[in-house]
Image 1 (cartoon, rainbow, N blue to C red):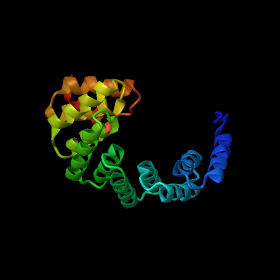
Image 2: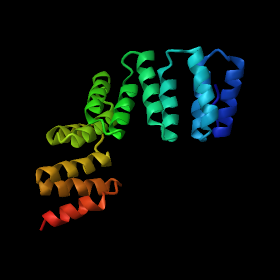
Image 3: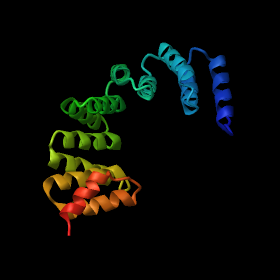
Length: 207
């Protein structure tokens, strides 16, 4: 297939693909992704449901539907679609990662940790799951575990700013102020806006 010059051309090509092969789940899915890029969520949603009707094991389509729910602030819908993704395809790590994220948003740290560990079991390089797991550990008061998870994130991507921010918070909790300062500086360097209360706590505890 020739390469599209812009989004409109990409969408036109995908619509042609769907028209030519309406029973192909991937065609509907590709069109939906293009529509989501243009924030046409209602139309994208219809195409994703069509994709699932054609290809019930298309786990990615459930994840995208979960993403649309998240856009609307519907955490329950997001969770359910990601749960369906893991049923559609065994070991689908992204679904477990997103379920962990929703648990964390709901304040369910224990459940988040279980889901995120499962995501990492299926994909040990799933950086977003390691990062969310670090936050879940922090929320649970498991500071050493949080530090370990953040260090894993940095091992996978040394420029992952939020991991340095979370390390700064974890080291503050442990009273290791030099390490907190070091990681706070790195978080800022890589473009993360550290919360004023964290900066104040560091200032109050360092010469």
